[in-house]
Length: 433
Image (cartoon, rainbow, N blue to C red):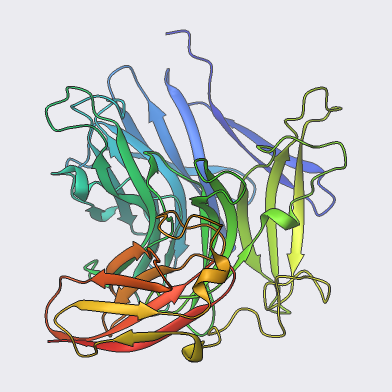
């Protein structure tokens, strides 16, 4: 009662002049839209949710290009938890897919909290075809809300979510403080999991970090979003950096650019937490990329406006022109191997491997040869099976230029990958007996 929050839809020309506008109230409830797309250029599809006093439901609108509403449909899938959340909309010739999640209206610190990731598919008439949700039976199986999703060229589904969740307090503690990592997950055409890969180096407070996904013509894909890493300036402070990453079709990281140096910081901006999200990416006809986001200057006494939107144009390698110090001539590609700098032995082994490098000590701060945090120059270790599925990940702990890892998995052939934020990457086949 008394609610006044509702959505709207508008159309503007190439100069930003609005020529059509429509308010979209929904009964006496809060109405929120979070996705919009053209359906073949003839119809406009909008998706979101409406919130009542007892639950929230998924919404689909269909309009013609004059903004005449053709239909409005509301859904509440039975398999989903009570509070349903819409984050994204995917439209193709087979229908419409709403991406988001659900929770049981609890907070992340409550013992009863449950969350699920959601893909919800309808045909072009709005008839429900199927619903896919992630499990939520244990903390480690939690998957958060889907933030970005694409239908891939092979008929599968690719999306970002939060997962690998754990309770940071003891099991007997009545309070739950969920920590999680941002992930990318790939499903096949039958919505069966193929692989998952983790973006973050550290667990962070449970929640959704905005991100975008873009599949390229060769089946590789771009991830645009935040990544939680250890701060170089202060090892005890965990910060989020915005990155543009390219992955192989099997989920192996090929290259990464840090976007923070590109953000439009002004001369009087001295606050370390100034910044903002990179919300969207598209690929242009010249194979370059256009990024959109917003920036907030948090410096005390900063002139207004403190927030502003921006556009960023990168070339086909993800570079900001010839002077971009992060880029090399073909920056987004398979990284150069550094086999002469590392050795892995014994190989084959029973899962215990020793890694040596004559150059690792050059990257370590004085007196910190045994630290476990990944600072600039530190290496992370990842093990993949031959399909690209992640088997094992950890930070390398170096002592006297040597690190030891123990991998508990079935016997077979795997790929060991070492990677650092400075751009070094090394891959080698290993055999576990």
